Image (tube, rainbow, N blue to C red; front, side):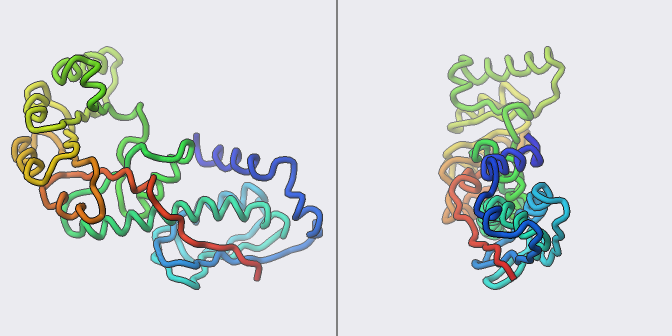
Length: 277
């Protein structure tokens, strides 16, 4: 689903057969102006999506952008002004805010964690732990916040995890079957394999090569040992139970990536408001 389709579905969900509040008490010919007001500090995200929402409701609405996606904001900042049909502004208001508030919350949380990693070469990844149908905008918000996207779905990368390994009859079997499948289907997809301990890292290296090894729920000592053992034969990714408090220490273990599901599924929306002026 592309963003235009998402906006169309969301508007139909919200408006139904009409915004009867605005239609009943606001004259059709009334022209108004509103500002997008920031009520909490953070990283602004979703401005471009909000513009798409307003234009989808009424192409004649005029948007004056003052701040762009990725801008650090504080209480009292104004992100943009929208001018035009008062009825149209009111119909678009809630959806534009819903997108922006959630996206800004994700971008703010992501930027906070990216700053903790700081100068280290380790990159912060999101996961597929996203709101159904909102994955595209939530992953966009991660990028706006300075993070990086993992695979988008099940189709654009092979990730052999613990259940796949168990169902396939072991690591070697899972990897060999995957390579045969990709060859048969003439698909060029990267292969990532999850390891639960150092023994499984050795098994993956013996059965490989693969593109990336996910080191799941490793402690610091084992993670450092795994990075040394892999020694550049594959990219390395740490995952599982990594928090804001432990993130820096995991990054210092030398992994290429750290994936954090909480980037998209444990965030607080940023407080934003659309006010008539």
